[in-house]
Image 1: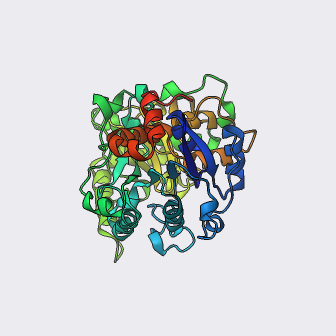
Image 2: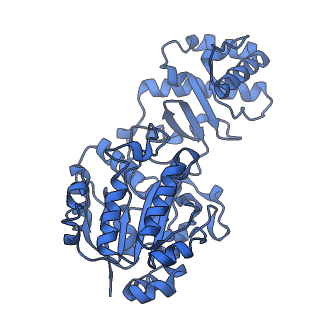
Amino acid sequence: MQFKFIDLFAGIGGFHGALSAAGGEGIWSSEIDNKAALIYELNWGLKPAGDIVALTDPSVSKSIPKHDVLAAGFPCQPFSKSGKQQGFRDTTRGTLFFNICQILEARKPAVVFLENVRNLAGPRQRDTWLTIIRELRNLGYRVSDIPTVFSPHLLPPSLGGAPQVRERVFILGTYVGKKRAWAESDVQPVVEHKPVAGFDPQKWDVRKILSKKDNQKYRISDAEENWLLAWDDFVKVMLRERKGARLPGFPLWADDFVAKPRIPKNTPEWKADFLRKNSAFYLEHKQPIDKWLQRWDGLKDFPPSRRKLEWQAQDEKSIWDCVIHFRPSGIRVKRATYLPALVAITQTSIYGPERRRITPDEAKLLQGFPKSFKFDGQKDSDSYKQLGNAVSIGAAYYVFRQHVLKDAVDIKKIAPELLRAVKASNTRPKL
C-alpha cells in the first residue's frame, strides 16, 4: 500500500520524484508558476493547484486531502545570499512558511519535509530559523535545533548521488504532539554534512552525465571564447613563471594589477585585503603580466566581471580542462569533478573540453530527474530556471528515507503504510 503525500511550491517535481520512488502517491500539489505547473503535470500526471495563499485560508485548509507526508520547498529568495536576506520580513514570500503551518494544523500529517537554501540556517537568519523550529514544535513536530545540511555530491552513485555541489537545508519532523515535541527537542540532524559510506566526492567525473550528441547549439559565443582564451593564456604564463606552482586562491582582478593598491575610503576589509594581494601578486610577476596585458590589449573590451578570474582548479594546467562558470563576481574555474549548484538565473556551467554549456537534459540528470523527464519543447531558459529552482531528487530521497527509518517506532503507530513503503523501497531512487 502506498503512502500519500502533498507537494507544495512544487516546481517541476523534485519532491514528487523522491517521494514516489520511496513508495508514495502524490495526491495534491500547488505551484504558482504556470510554466512549471505544466511541466509538473506532463511528467507526474497531477495538475497542481495555484497560489497557496488562497488555498490555505483556514476556511479551506481542510479541503486539502488527508496525507501522510507534507513536502515543501518553500521560496528561498528571502533567505538566499544572492538576495536581500529579509527572511520573514519579506511579506510576499517569507511568510509563506505560515501557510504551510496552516495545513499542518488542519491535517497533522505524520511527517513534514521542508527544503531551503543553506543560508536559511546561517547567522543572519538566526531569528527566522528559531521561529521555524518553534512553530513546528508548537504544531507537534519533533525537529532538531541543528539544521540538516546535505548535498547530492556527498552521495555515491549507488545511493542516488550526482556530481553537483548543492548544499541545502532539509527540515524533517515527525508528529508526536506538542508536549513530546518540546520534551524531545534534543535530537540530532537526520544525516551529517559529510560524504556517505566513505565515498570520496573527488571521484566524481562530470563526463559521466554528458551527452554524446552533437551539442553545437550550446557552444559558447565568440566573445566568451575570447575571454577564456585570454585567461587561459594567463594561466599558462603564470604556471611557467611560478615553475608549476598553482595559482593563488584569492580572486585575480586585472584592473587591480597595479604597483600600489587603490583602496578608497570605507572599502570593506575583505575587499581591501584582495586589493593588497592583487597588487603584491602583480609586483611579484610584473614583467610577464605586463606582456600578457599588452598581448590582449589590456582586456579593454572585456566586461568588468570578465576581467576577473577565480581559480579554484588546484593543479590543472588549462582552463579548457575545467568547468567554467560566468558569475557576476568573475570567471570561476573548477576541476571537472563536480559542478556548482544549478541556479535559477543564467549562469549555466560551461564544460571546457567541449567549449559549451551543459544542456537542459544534462542539467536534469544533475538534479536526479530520469532520462524520460520531458520539457515539452519549451525554451531552454525556462528549463534551466526550473531546474535551478528544483529539489535534488537523490539528496531528498536519501534524507527522507533516513528520517523515516530513524523514527520508525513513532511512524509505525500513526502511518504504518508509510513505514512499510519506505522499508520496501530501494536504497537509491528508481523512477
